Amino acid sequence: MGEIDLIFREGDVLVFVEVKTRSSETWVRPASAVNPEKKRKIFATARDYLRLLDNRQIPIRYDIVEVLLEDGQVSEIRHQPNAFAPARIRR
Image (tube, rainbow, N blue to C red; front, top):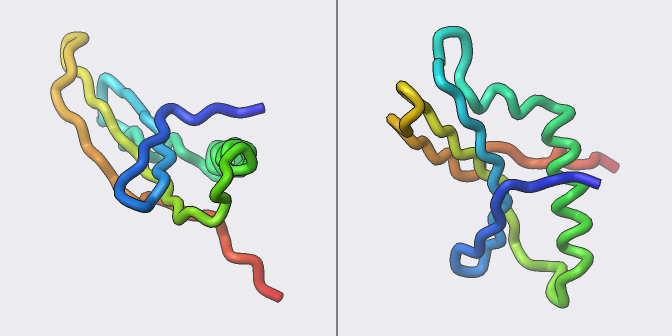
């Protein structure tokens, strides 16, 4: 149904991580590829994953990791904790 690159646990928080790799930032940062459609897919996959857990009330967050390449080698890694979140539903 979807995909999530990495899932970690940091203390009591379950962290879903999207990794974006680029060889150049000339036009735009790698994190900008996490557009609204990609976020919807990540949220849906995370919901499916949480249904498998005994503790569905665990706190969660969504991070982005940017990997920059230079001549095919990793030149920089940037971690953006809590980079995005689902929109809250107003009632």
